[in-house]
Image (cartoon, rainbow, N blue to C red; front, top):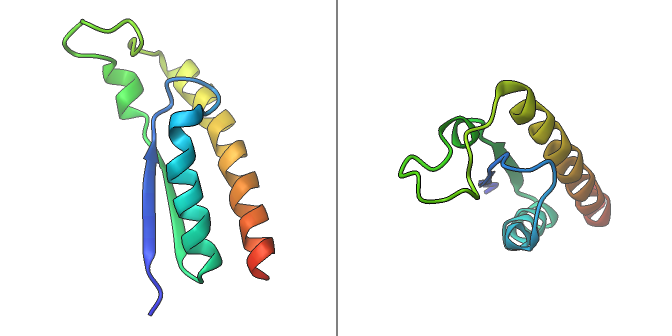
Length: 90
């Protein structure tokens, strides 16, 4: 049967980084095998930041920044998964 497979992405920037590659590759692979990829773009992480206060790499972001970052990541993921679907003939 068909599966739904998900991977979450944090909107801490308006693009993705190398660390996101494995999740994207796995989603695309499952899609090419006839399954449904689900890319979750979570805004909560950006609103919380690093609650310990130890990391400046995860600052608390305002809603406008989270929305802009989410839109940028969404464009990237939609493009990758559209290409993957085309490769699968779907």
